[in-house]
Amino acid sequence: MSQSAQKPVPSKYKVPALEKGLDILEELARSPRPQSLTQLANNLGRSSNEIYRMVNYLEWRGYIRREPHSSNYYLSLKLYELAHLNPPLQNLLNAATIPMEQLAITLRESCHLGVLRHGQLVVVKQALSPEKICLSVEVGGRFSAVHTASGRLLLAYLAQEELEAFLELDQDYQRLSPPEKEAFLVRLEEIRTKGYSDAESETHVGINDLSVLVGNPKIGLTAALTVASLTFAKSAPAKKEILHALQECAAKISKSMGIKNGDKDDIL
Image 1: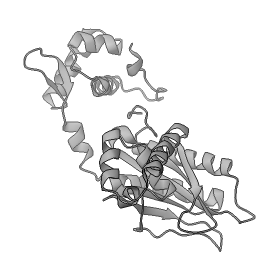
Image 2 (image 1 turned 90 degrees about the vertical axis):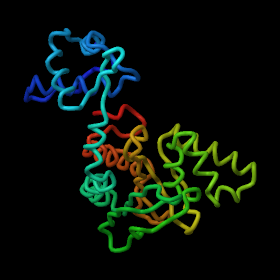
Image 3 (image 1 turned 30 degrees about the vertical axis):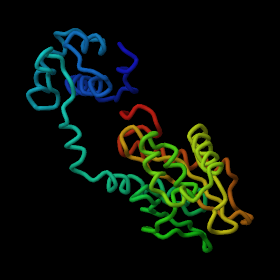
């Protein structure tokens, strides 16, 4: 069996036919090129006879197609079409509600979720700390992607062409001097390497922002989960504690949406 076809920990409930069909779809989704029935069977660690009927059925239902000249199989866009019947952002918000509320209670700090929209960082969800005095970021608020920890995190995970196109139109970036632009790009590389973004707020004194990625860049669904904490608060949790809790929360949100968190394979 190919490494790409390795299965997750099995469920206690066995549904062999469904498992076979999903294995076929996932293998074709990962494959950079169409596969013959024999290739597909080999990659799945099965015989051609085992998967023949299922492959034919998936083709009949429109989930896979065959190349006219080779008869090799490839994934159709039907799954893509089905996925887009439900707006991705709404799925993200639904998945984030309980984990974010739990995070706010655990850390006693507010947290918010931001996405890139029309050249800015837009806050799309917030969970408030149970403390009487806490920070709040308005849902719908728009901020610079260049001058916020969460914005830089999302920029760091853009594909190179997308990043270049974004920065070309971003006024905050264009105002930077050549050395500052170079330093900014290095900063993005560092963020992607370590997997999180943290910095003192550039707009408010005494606030530190720590952000981690939610979602998966490979499928174009990403958001920044951020805890903004007061640097002078006596009861503020340590950075290591905040980061660990953020990463756990991000993983829960992504798992709830059925995807892997970060720039990994997009199928659980």
